[in-house]
Amino acid sequence: SNDLVSVDQFNNEEVMAFIKLAQKFKAGKTIQLERPSYAMNLFFENSTRTHTSFEMAERRLGMQVIPFDPKTSSVTKGESLLDTLKTVQAIGVDLAVIRHPHDRYYEPLVEANLSMSLINAGDGSGQHPSQSLLDMMTIYEEFGHFDGLKIAIIGDLAHSRVARSNMELLTQLGATVYFSGPKVWYNADFAAYGDYLPIDELVGSMDVMMLLRVQHERLDESSDETFDAEAYHQQYGLTMARGAQMKPNAIIMHPAPVNRGVELASDLVEAPQSRIFQQMTNGVFIRMAMISNVLVHQGLLQPTQLED
Ligand code: CP
View 1: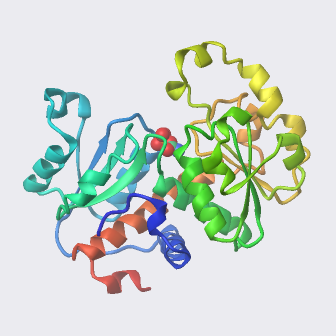
View 2: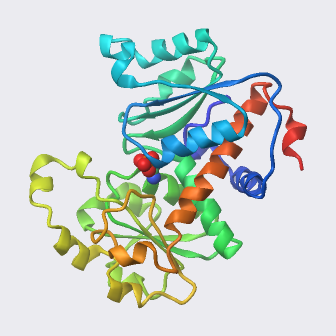
C-alpha cells in the first residue's frame, strides 16, 4: 500500500531511511515532481505543528495544497470520510493527510484501496507516525544511535498516540523504555514495552526525558475538574530541581503543545537540554521524507531523485 498510517509498518531499516532522507532535506536537498501534484490536509482535530509542518513539507516538495475545512465541508451534511476521500480523489487530489479523533479511523480507508495516498497525522489515542519519526530523527541527531539508550516517557500515557508510537519504535530500535506519571495511566499495553518507575528514580539515569501533554480534552469531566496543575507538577513533572539531576548529556523532549509549569517547568522549555523546538523543525523534514516516499509509490516522483 502507498499509505503510511502506523509505525507498525516500519522496520528499522525503513526508519533509518526516513531519517537519512530527512537529513538530506534538512541540508537543502530539493526534488522535481513528474507532474503538478496536489495535497489536501484534512484535520478533524485541532493542530498547529502537524498541520503547519505537513503543509510546509508539501510546499517545499513543490506540491499544490488544496484547502479543506471540516466545519464548512459536506461532512457536516453526513458525508462519510470514505466518500469525502473518494470525492477529493475524483477532483484530482493525490495525497490526503488526515487527523481524526477516532482510533483506527484509517482502516476502512486503507481497505478501500484508493489510488490516492493517505498519511495518518494522528488518530485518537492510536498512532502518530510522523511525530514518532521526527522524535526518532531528533534522538538520532543527538546520540547517533539508539542501542542501549534509556528513555523515559512520562505523563498522560493512556491518551497518548505519541507514547504508543514511540514505545514501539524505540524498543524495536534497541532503546530501553521506562514509563512514569500517574500510575493509573500505565496499563498492560505499556507494561509490554517497559517498566513503571516514579520520576525521581528515573531522572538521574535517563538519556532522554520525554514528557507528554496532559490531554484535558480527553479527560472525563470529573477528572478534569479535580486536576491540580501544581500538585501534578510536583509529583510527576520535570521541575527545575529534577532538571538539575539529569545526566550532563541528557535531553528533554515533548511533542507539544506544552502545558508550561505542568509537565515541565516553563524555563526548561528553552533550556540548553531542551530539544522541543528542534523536534518541530525536524518535523518538516521527516514529513518531506514520508511524502516523497509515497509520491515514488504513486509514480509522481522518480526514485532516482531520492538517491543523492
Ligand atoms: N505534536 C503535535 O502533534 O502537535 P499539534 O497537535 O499542534 O499538531
